[in-house]
Length: 102
Image (tube, rainbow, N blue to C red; front, side, top):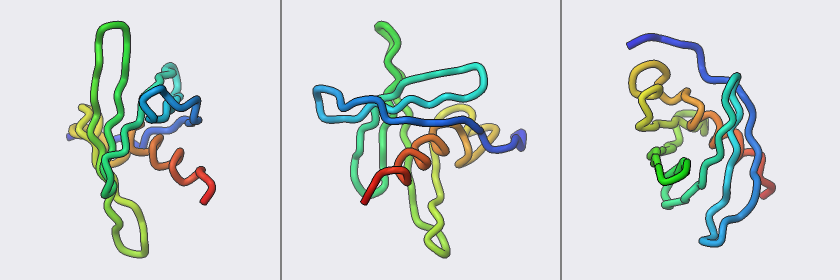
């Protein structure tokens, strides 16, 4: 496993899809992608990347660690091999969720 720095970039909520899920844009250097966010409850999410007929689903989970610090996991190749819990999906979704008003 390579130990890379956490992914960096920005996120923004775009719109609510017809099925009730929200569409999130994640921008990292050299890449802008839109994902449909499916909230499965209990800190579990699916990020669906739709590109033409291709659909990629990334499964994310959030659990609360010590001092209420969120610990994330994702099944994308980057999270599995390079940046556990620090891939663009984990960091992007986390940042988007904490930006929501309560």
